[in-house]
Length: 127
Figure 1: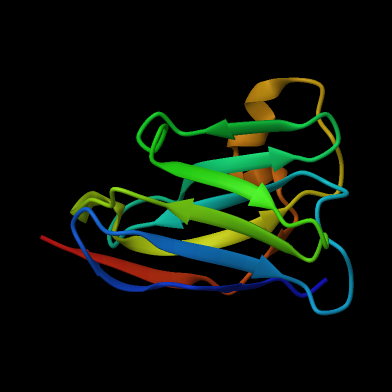
Figure 2: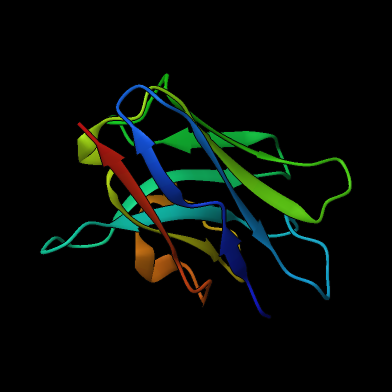
């Protein structure tokens, strides 16, 4: 498993970015996947998750209505479309994949539930 996150950059408040998570050797989405982020001096936090099996997505309250997680039809990429960006969205963003499904919903919001991580991509939102 080699997850690679890309698409970060510098954007002004109100702007948009689309992050991508790929693995060059296999399809993605058979297992739960998520985006997390870590701002300087803060703990890593859940941003958005997707379970293709069942068609579930979930979001942190802070990004609901602004961010959208999806998988492309070729099954090779997990996207995080980020609109209406704010300075507080500045962070390193990581994609992650679990190796199993969980019975209880709250597990999907915890970084300890994910086994594989990409290297992170920096998003900086200027005010």
